[in-house]
Image 1 (tube, rainbow, N blue to C red):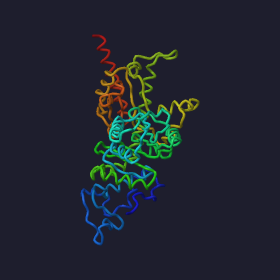
Image 2 (cartoon, rainbow, N blue to C red):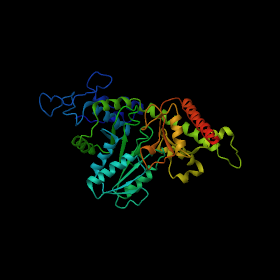
Image 3 (cartoon, rainbow, N blue to C red):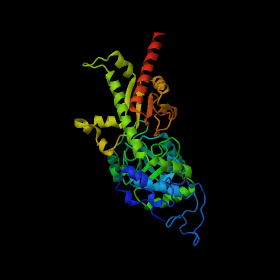
Image 4 (tube, rainbow, N blue to C red):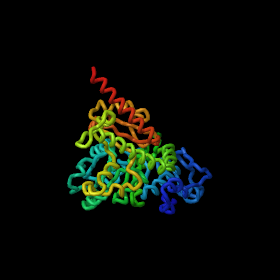
Length: 413
């Protein structure tokens, strides 16, 4: 079978990789890759294990793989600087990592509650699996699992620092980089051993597919991951794989623009919050109080970068900009003074759809406490889409002013 990853495209730009990294697997004259909905394939005429799809490819049964899955894995492998295996969801990808490496002691950082649920399920199936926090000593830890950027805050962790700690303890470092796909971050460059993505989010980018990805640094581990995927039926369907491949063609254009817009919105909202704070040198105006006094905090990697610049860099401990050379991600969080205020704003934003998930072309705002009881009830997670910055900024302004008007009216009752 032809190698899935084509090294010819390792040195070209991300936008070129997105479009051409699977070209060596093209057999038909189609410009857009065929979906290949078939579940089974004719054997080769001369041998049941001979090539039956072009001169150097072989497909037998769709639970193993299909041409469109192979193309999608080829593009993902080049984009992520590793060797990618595609799954039916981000959670099935996470389960595949646990099954492959069979950890007995896991150090787990802040993460999506679904990952915690998968690890709990793994504990129930395997037994005698210990889970500790990432701030604990790594004695006996064989797998460190961190999320960066973190869902829902959008803040990032020092990947180099955790890689050094993990490797010193003889553990593998798994990085869930769902919120910062290429070209925003490349966790292997900071020492990660395995990278996972919920491809449902930014890799898919259109809120119309479910998929997950496991990326390893070694081609040797791909065969084992493929075998387990086939045995347990964890693979992605043909339509979902095709939709993902379609989305990868515009990955760089989408996520870089979304990240830029998010950073500008974060800066705007943070300026409103600061302007509403009284100091010895500043007395907020009524307009400043109307926009900013109910914002308790903003969280995003761009604010980490700002706080770590210049003389204050030692307080951060790592170079956020170096880790994220092309943007800090398009997810940030806003904390309000109360749950009621958070829900009011979520329901009064007009261009931000009030819905869960993230990574689509449309901006979304989510009240995470509704899904995850451990989440702060005063917090909103914002996933920035591809709308105009000016329009999104005006949307926040009208929602914050509506909150101010509503509370002023209630105070008079």
